[in-house]
Image 1 (cartoon, rainbow, N blue to C red):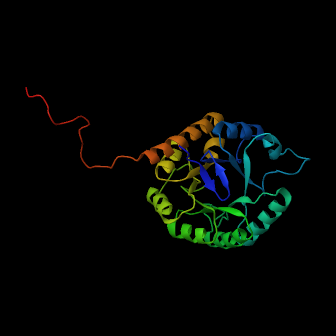
Image 2: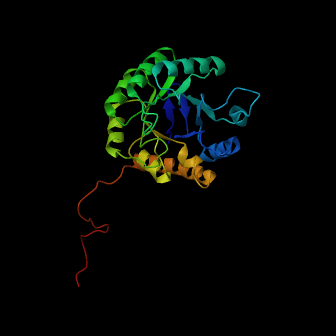
Image 3: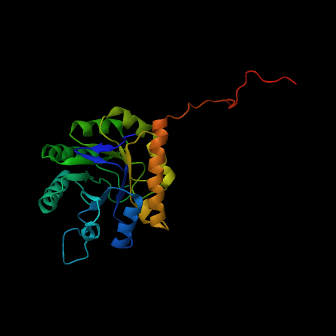
Amino acid sequence: MNDSLIIGNKTFESRLIVGSGKYKDFKTTYEATLASKAEMITVAVRRVNITNPNEENLLDYFKDSSVQFLPNSAGCVNANEAITLFRLTKAATGIDFIKLEIIGDTQKTLYPDVLETLKACEVLAKEGFVVLAYSNDDPVMAKHLENAGASAVMPLAAPIGSGLGIQNRYNIAFIKSAIKIPVIVDAGVGCASDAAIAMELGADGVLTNTAIAQAKNPILMAEAMCEAVKAGRKSYLAGRIPKKPYATASSPTEGLLEF
């Protein structure tokens, strides 16, 4: 069965995207990413060196792999900052496949500023960027982002790095039914079962960083996330049984022998 994930003009076999932050070193980042079998890794270009040859360079670790970099705008707090950052990134690297995230509350919740995100999305999409837009779990905003030209919407499951898992399962399902572009659940995933649940709800993919990077064994957790995303996707496609308030016998009840 061909069940590839298509975002913009690219096709991916893996539905798991990983992040590059919070690892103890670039070597562990590289090893965990390979273990996850992810084909994309997000990179905060304001915080991680990917181009300076005079410093340890994350890009060097991945130069012989097929893993693609997905620059993100972490650290940007308004549309103008994000737009400028991505223009500079494209000029330096040629990458136009981006994760747009603009944080409104930088002190406590790290919730996105969806109005600034929407403004930046409109500009960047018109300039030819393939925009994966990080947002809150709001189906109305997801539709606005789709109309603004986003190639994928990335609703949060819970606050960034919280590990709380999906706090509003209904909203993820509502977003999936509201838009035609891919839905990638992002932020708040804490363990492999969270990723499986996201996929069973109909999400097209999952992005996770902290759950792998801060695990006691990042390599093993990366492998678990890979398997969970695959299992959740298969479960969704297979179609779960309906929930019922009472028991239903699993064995036939007709033709029973009388004693």
